[in-house]
Length: 627
Image (cartoon, rainbow, N blue to C red; front, top):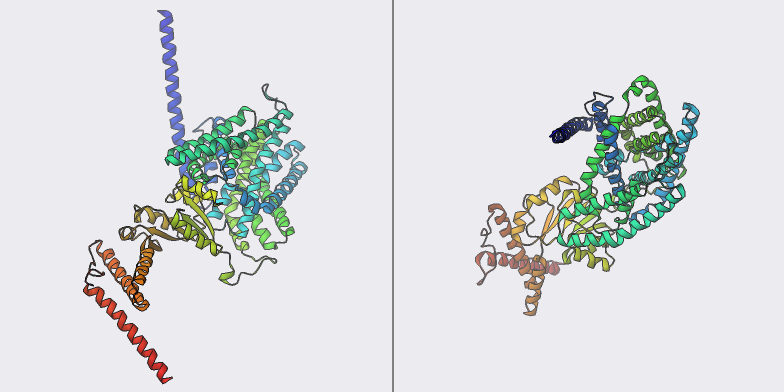
C-alpha cells in the first residue's frame, strides 16, 4: 500500500506540475502577444516599423525588463524557425530568369558591398574597441547587413521595387540574405566552444554540405514538384499549406541531423521551388507562418537583450550606432559612384541601406555561443543595431528625395511614351486569356499568368509559356504575384459566380491597377455592378455579332444595311442593359430588342439610322455638286 500511495502521490505531483506549466505557457503567450500587439501598433503609427515594436516589447517583458516572461533563450531557439521561413521565401524569389537579369547587381554590387563594408567595420572594431581579430570579424560581418524586414516592405508599398533604384536595393539585400549562410559557417569555424562529441570534422561537414544540397535539389525535383501537381488536381488549399510546411521543416530537420545550418536547408528548399508553377500559392500560404515566427524571433531577441548594458553607457551606444550608419553610408556611396552612377543616386541608396539588419541578432547570438564574444558584447551590438533601425524611417525620407535624381549616364525620360511599359496580371489562361495575353505581349507589356487548373498549366508549359498556379481572387496571392506594382489585372476566368463581392476588395486593395474582367452573360454583368471594375466584356457578345454579320452576308444583304443592323443592335442592347442595371430586373427593357415582326422600338432605331445615312449621303452629294 505504501508503494501504491507513493506512486499515486508522484503521479498527482507530475500531473499538477504539467498543469502549472501549461497554465504558465498560456499566460506567457497571452502577455507576449498582448504587449507585442500594443507596441507594434504604436511603432507602426509612428512610422518606425514592426521590427522595433517587437524588440521593445520583448525587452520590456523579458528578464532584464519587468520579468513578466522568462525563458528567452528557449524561445529564441524555437523562434529561429522564423529565420528559416524567411530564407525559404528568399529562395522562392530566386527565379533563374530574374537572377540572370540582375546578376551583375547581385553578385557585383552586392558582393562588393558586403565584403568591403564588413572588412572595414571589422578593422575599425579591432583598432578602436580592443576586440580580438576573430571577435572583430564575428561582429563586423553581421554589421554589414541591412534590414530586409524594414526596407523591402517600404519599396513594395510605394511601388518602387521594380524601378532601377529599387532593383539595386533589392539586389544588395538579396546578396546580403545569401551571405548569411557563409557568415554562419565562418562564425562556426572560428568557434572556441568545445565541439560536440557527435559532430563530424570540418572536412566531412564540407562534404555533407555539398551532398545535402544535391539530395535536396533531387528531392525537390522528383518528389516535391510531382506531389504539388497531385495536390493541385484536388484543389485543396489546406494541402498546399501542409506541403509547404513539410518542405521547410523536413529540409531544416535534414540539415540539422547532419549538424549543418537549418537556414541553409530552408533556403535550398525555396530555391528548388522557385521555378515551380505553384510558387505563388506556396508563398502566399507560408507567408502568415513566416510573419508569426519572425515576430516571435524579434520578441525573443528583445527578451535576451541586456538593457543594463545599454543603460550603463548610453552615449557609447548612440556613438556606435551613429558610427555604423556613417560608415555604411560612406562605403556604399563610394561603391555606387564607382559604377558610374551619380553621387545623389549613390547617397540615396546608401541612406536606404544604412541600418543594421535583423540577421545581426542571430549572428551575435551565435558568436556568443561560440565563445567569440561575451553576452554583454552581444547585447551592446544588438542595441547598436536596434538604434540604427530607429533612424531608418527618417533617413528614408532623404533617400526618397535623392532616388529620383537622374544618373548622368541614364537616358532622359521626358515624355510618357519613353517610360518603360507597365505590368499586367492575367488571371485565367484558357482560350480567352491566351488572346488577351498575346495582345499585351505585342506591345512589350510584362505579363504574369495565373491559372488554377494544373492541366492548363502543364499544357502551357509544353509551349514554353510560364503559368503560375493559384486562385487569382485571393488578395494575398495577388500581392505575392506583384499586384501592388501592376497597372492591369485582367480576369479571363470561366466562372459565372464572380460578383461585386469578389471583385470590390481587389479593386480597393490595388487602387493603382485597372481591373478588367470577362463575364459569362448579362446576368453576371449585372452582378458585378458596383464592384469598381474599370471594364467588363461578355465572353460571347462580340463573337456572336461577328457570326450574325457573317449570316447576313450569306443572305446577300447590302453591306450598308449590315452596318445599320449592327449599330442598331448594339444601341438597343446597351439601352436594355442600362434599364436592367437600374431596375435590377432581367425583364426590364424588353422592348429594346429585335423580335419576329421587327418590334416598334427596334424598327424605330433602325429607321433613324437609315435616315441618318441617307442624310449624310445627300449632304455629300450636294457638297460634290457645289464643289
